[in-house]
Image (cartoon, rainbow, N blue to C red; front, side, top):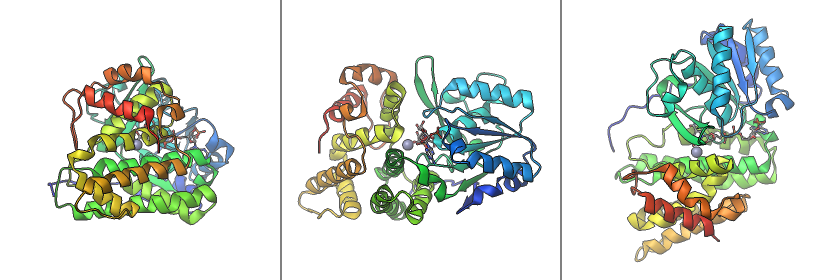
Length: 390
Ligand code: NZQ
Ligand code: ZN
């Protein structure tokens, strides 16, 4: 195991009706005027925004609202938020929604105290300050409720890029699984796929002797395999929703990834798809991740075979671990299909002729991670994904 620091300062406030504590929580963390930032309407329609504002009012915390965050959030909304916060003297940002609203809130939080263009933080610069951010989560997926990451798309050139800093880790995150019961099955499945991908990006490592994080990863993966079909069959299954919601946090606050090398190639390859076609991030991952697995399996067949046998119950073939590995990848793709995910370009709405453009934009150089990938490798992974079948 490698040396590491693990910093996860967020207070998680989990369970039914906990959004009614927002006002008191904002006060506890020093917010004097709050921007409530949310998406395209689901949180308004469900009455959640009303309850959050009532909680702020009850605690005597003034607030302004900015809705309309697009899934795969864009820079123009961030600029709007920065301007609004400066004009209104906002000192605390409360995101109500999924990864998109949370990531947009984090971008605004870094942009408000910064004199330059906030996009600098999505081009490699580290922020020196940020307004405090908190969240009320409505979809278990991106893990942004516990992460120090934010992903934004720059409309000019449709560049989807990430920023990372401990300054944007949420002060608190309200996780009420009941809020996710209104999700369409497709969005639920996209979230499950993203959660599994966050684990796989950590699981496929060149670091040895990492039993504890291997086992934590496997626990999250097995939980998804068990709980996803239950919520697809019964969207109001609170207990299954609860397990998925906590898993989404555990998958991405890095408790599963400390002390080991990580990959993140599938995410980089997927981000070009969601930037180009505006598809859901989880759906893009369903197309890319099994294809990436097939392409890199020879790098360490035994590690894939371990995943296959422990997570998907495939019989271990010690003489031919690659056969077990391939059975596991097939089981993963079948699982994704069974919960309603696309598994190839046609099902996602992507086009094979766009592959060169996406590879050029991704520009992997000498690559990184479990098996470093150059442009030619990324091209081959997109080609596998384009034609993938069960
Ligand atoms: O906008 P509204 O109307 O709220 O609708 C949303 C949206 O259409 C809807 N939704 C959310 N909660 C709902 C609901 N509909 C009904 N009931 C509810 N309770 O679901 C749709 C998807 O929401 P979104 O916030 O886009 O989903 P997600 O959490 O998957 O976030 C995706 C974004 O996060 C980024 C992705 O790239 C993508 O841009 N990621 C962020 C990460 C991070 N910050 O750590 C890591 C991830 O790997 C990921 O890249
Ligand atoms: Zn993701």
